Image: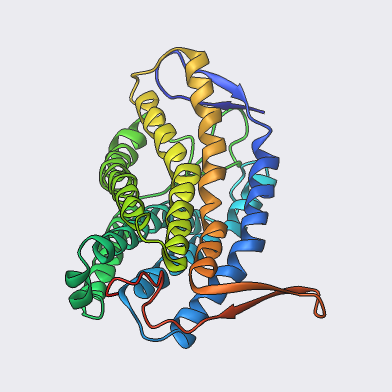
Length: 327
């Protein structure tokens, strides 16, 4: 199957059959690992871990965002197994597509909130101690969801997001891809630009700047707690560099290509293929985040008699990372 990779003059196409195997395999793995991990994390953080610190609140919201993404994956798996033929109707396409992409940026937003929270705890402990149990965390979390909700609803209400490609196959519908130039210019491009600046560029700068500063500060503290906090920081940096950064760099190139700034077919084809790979990579965030939750709030112990992993949750009064800011 040749897939169109552009709607500007000098249109290019590239063989893309690999996506029918790549996405179902990756999404199935992400669901198998991510759904129980995030649901388990939600249960533990909501019902078992006390007190409810600012970090805990952000982690709960991050797990909610991951769970929302995971709930859209069965539809996407069917879509790719059905060779990019969407059968669930226009409204389901609008909802699953917008929820999937919106929650990518919601996840980044809450990881950024955790980053700022950890930076404040280490660099400005007295301010952190005054703020960590206040309502500002809830206000920030609600603000993130409200902004995302307004964007999602406005995008859904504008019109259909599935399309009928030509080529003698009028009944085959694509979902959230193969936008016409008119639809791209009118709807997708403004949201893409907004998302790249406020949902990607700014959070990435905060994460990539604040976490090294925090790591440098913590490295001066010779305790097991500090070493554990460093592992948490490096894990979040690894998730950002593996899942989010490649996706957003390629998405920026994809935006340039769709706007006509990149015409050369080999480059356009390379961007299209890279976009498919990074779309698969960005979903891995939803199954990697539970590892972050568990490593920062629990001890992982192998139980040979039961032949399984057992998670033993420690009661820690200082919250997610237990950085001893007041000692």
